[in-house]
Image 1 (cartoon, rainbow, N blue to C red):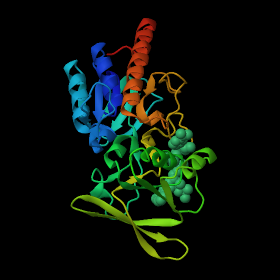
Image 2 (cartoon, rainbow, N blue to C red; image 1 turned 90 degrees about the vertical axis):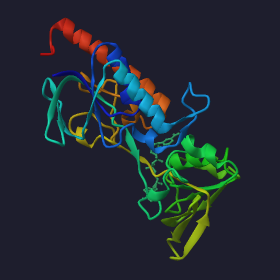
Image 3 (tube, rainbow, N blue to C red; image 1 turned 45 degrees about the vertical axis):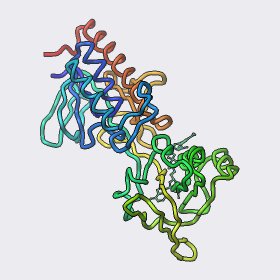
Image 4 (cartoon, helix red, strand yellow; image 1 turned 30 degrees about the vertical axis):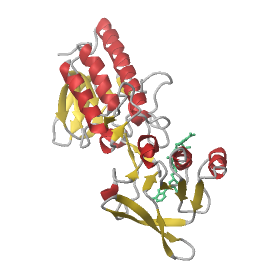
Amino acid sequence: MEKTIIIGTGPAGLTAAIYLARANVNPLVIEGPEPGGQLTTTTDVENFPGFPEGILGPELMDRMRKQAERFGARFRRGWVEAVDLAKRPFEVRLEDGDTLRAETLIISTGASAKYLGIPGEKESIGRGVSACATCDGFFFRGKRVIVVGGGDSAMEEANFLTRFASEVVVVHRRTELRASKIMQARARENPKISWALNRTPLEVLYNENGVTGLKVRHNETGQEEIIPADGLFVAIGHTPNTKFLQGWLELDEQGYIAVRPGTTETNVPGVFACGDVQDRRYRQAVTAAGSGCMAALDCERYLEEAAARGVGQSV
Ligand code: NAP
């Protein structure tokens, strides 16, 4: 039996691994199909403190992993299919048929940006298509970019991008925006933002230099048109990776794990959550790492208290 299993290897999971390994907890870290998480899909990370020249996302994650390994964290590839949180120790069932057992769990499975799923989009991720303006907006200084979406995220991304881009075109599939009034008003008052409403994205156009535009269809007239642009930011929401936790942990209406305010404690004692899987607001590498540290400290305290009570000892 493990003392702690950490599920997910983004900045939250790896930071938790570093802290727990240094505390001699010797955690087992389950690495899913996208080791390193969302950061491995970005290029330069210029806002992670301590890297004045910036650092490539995959390299940052590789360094965090090595740091965790250096102190004794163990890694195992696998896809968690199901958990049983009613049993003590907890059970974690992997797709390959293995069942792991642990006294405590740290869930750091992150959230995945939703993409449009249209032709040209996948091929252009990291080459003009992005789902994170904070990460990649800087690269579009003086350029024309498109933001797809009509929610708060899209408004926020559009406003943020006007710091760099010469023009931001918001493409939304309906006439009405979903975003809150205040976010809409802020975007509408921004002279650098223009609107292409009631249009369905059909295809991302690109050449060897990157994105060149977006083909859309007007929903009323049926007419197709091309909106030229150098970049395309998809802001149609995120999906927290919590499917395997449904019915076991308290989730909010969008599937994010509910934690006790100011902590990483879930409604099941001994199960902690950190990073984007419990955060729909900040979603930054540094905030994820910070909550990973919190989860490790919460988990360590829980293990100490359990040991003092003489329950849940490792066998
Ligand atoms: P959201 O509110 O679910 O909005 C997603 C938007 O994307 C909607 O306008 C939706 O169109 C559009 N969309 C979804 N799938 C699409 C598709 N396949 N093709 C084209 N368009 C598509 O998501 P969000 O904006 O990420 O916000 C999520 C939550 O976080 C919300 O509760 C929001 O209030 C909150 N949030 C708050 C702040 C803030 O307060 N600062 C900032 C960001 C997010 P329809 O409108 O037609 O459905």
